[in-house]
Length: 191
Image (tube, rainbow, N blue to C red; front, top):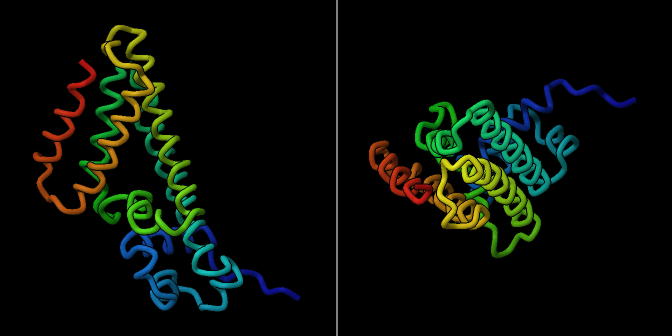
């Protein structure tokens, strides 16, 4: 007879996500995961499979969490420019309880050259962000708030690239005013 789980799978997955987010895939040992998740190694294998499978599940959770936060942040905001600025502000003024940067960006840098599954997950998540930006830009262009001198899809890709860069910068630059100047300069393209 199978034993019931003595832990909350979703909570433990969140803990694994944070370990990977802080340390990356390659630097995270199985012992780091066991310690960070607070479960036995056998339970980890039985529940999540191997390290790579756990990493992919952590990435999926991170992507879902991120898109949910982004959509929640801009929901009900009438101004497209303000909504886009709020997305940049989310990165600059992140929650102190979370590691700096972005698990997806970290994965793109660390694993893109040799892990097609991780690369695919990153690209899917990036595409979701680009789609959200494109929707906001299209709305802003339709209302006359955002200039139509560039296509919405092109602006979305450009702004997403800036968001990715900002996610890298928050890891190395403790100066929020510098990050804000970067965002302000980037967002000037919408005028």
